[in-house]
Amino acid sequence: MLQRPVESAQYKYPHTAFPYSDLIDENARRGADVPEYEVLDTGMFDDERYFDVQVEYAKHMADDILMRVTIENRADIDTGLDVLPQIWARNMWSWKPTQTRPALTLEIVNESTYVSAEHGGHEPTVITAWSPDAAQVEWLFCENDTNVRRLFHMDGVGPFKDGFNDYLLQGDENAIRRDKGTRAAARMHVQLKARGKAK
Image (cartoon, rainbow, N blue to C red; front, top):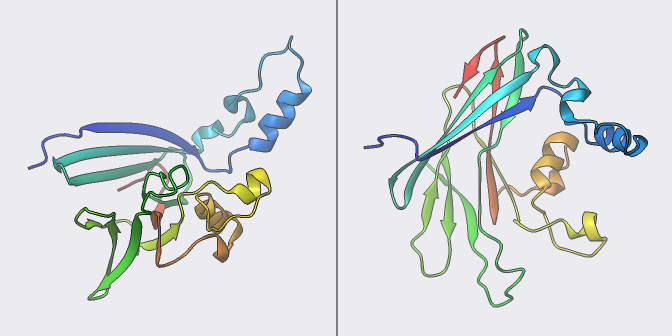
């Protein structure tokens, strides 16, 4: 029986896109005699236009872990959010060429979907996702590899670990896979009423 979360964390996500360019540009304009331009200075959290996201983990047995994500809309407006709980294999293969690359693979049984995680010598692990507040779960896959094309202008085989972002925000279907990889996300879209909560 699950007694209590073994770990929890809380995050605050704004309703708008994170203002990376604004922060970089404004801080570049400021001299050493002017305070740093911070996230709160951008106005992105004004009028409580953000989500409180609480993530809790509970362990039943060594290989049986539950993750619960609770989202609360802090604003006085209805809005939606894509929630992407993720699992990934620790990238050892980039540093140790002899290391076996693990595999996360989509499985479909009787119209139900789950991910099978396999790594040499270990029994396969089953990863499932469900939400009473989301109509469906869409599994997305990529490789848990740094995007060397973007960062270092080098050739590299993707899709890379920033692929979920590129798929969701730019609609780039080539940034993800639908069947396998070393990183997987269970995409669930939830609609929240003003001051509403979802799990």
